[in-house]
Length: 226
Image (tube, rainbow, N blue to C red; front, side, top):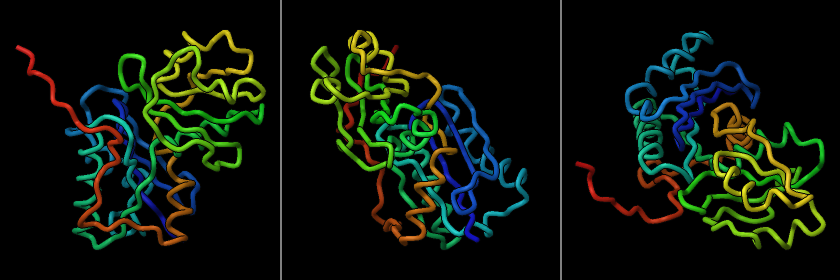
């Protein structure tokens, strides 16, 4: 049975998990800013030791490809590409928001639409909408939140909003009866197992040489702080 190591670095959370056929075996996570570059490899080593596996035992490696933090995504993708190249293993790309939707679906008793959100600064979020069967209803996008956001859905359909971008959405849409919110779902390698296992069965692997993160928006460098 295939064992897949998954890495999530799209936000400040640095997360590594092992799954066998989509079932969680073990996980290591840090909720610390800027921990990815120094701690990601350590977490990989720790979860492998915890579950008594080696890198050679992995059938594939999965990485959260975004959207999210430019720096975090580059660290995660470059680390996994290096492992896959050195070990001659396939790499699986997992949309960060789709993995979050799987986590949100475990909490959703209302059969509401799922809308994971990642903060993109100011009143903008990265988001998508999926139904309870984890089918994409509205694809990944950068969206500015105002009182008219999601109006076509909220008229007659409940939506569960979650992720670190949902707080700003709650400020604007919290009065809507069909707008539901939870703070219990964050980007995590734990939620990647289902998607990664499905892609592994379909042999939906990335081209290791040309594979890049899904930034969604162009990178704009700011002025260095004094």
